[in-house]
Image (cartoon, rainbow, N blue to C red; front, top):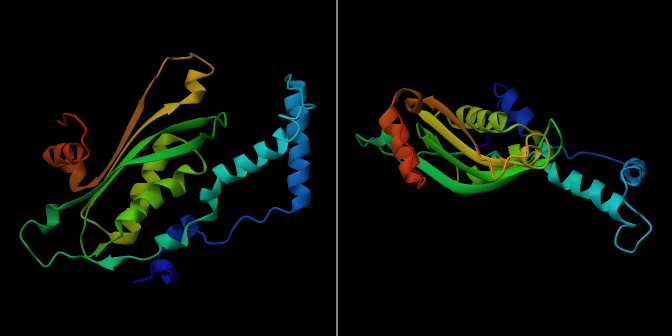
Length: 219
């Protein structure tokens, strides 16, 4: 089943957009010039063998780190559930993690990185396990905030699969906290998103954390 052609899934199709970003070479060179001015003003000597190409590498790295805006066509396919009406089908979880991710904070454009854990309870459709990793990377490879990444993953799974429940847990270290501001040492930010059965069932949330290999007490 390819849901990319479903006119009712406009929000999903927008999130999964398949057209790549088109930035002309001339514009890239202009960006490199801006970066050179900034680096030089801040004290970087750009006239050494090690640094003469730093502005170009920086702009290319920034472009690569935000490739999530280009979408991922491999996320468009779902399959019928493997469940055949057994009594425990509605509470059978699919859980993937830890999934490493790297993102750029939209407030300071500094990296944050960590692990994601994603679970869902299938209804009529399932998605390939590797697609959960692709989904995490799709939304993390953008200018982002941690809370929104979790919401976007949950929203997309809801739209694609209409499952009985979705669970998303993210834990990450934010360099904008460690390198500037309060300069905390090794802080960890944790966020959760619960949908459907997970939102109403503490035992199910605890089972999710156990399946992820995490020790959490849900009340």
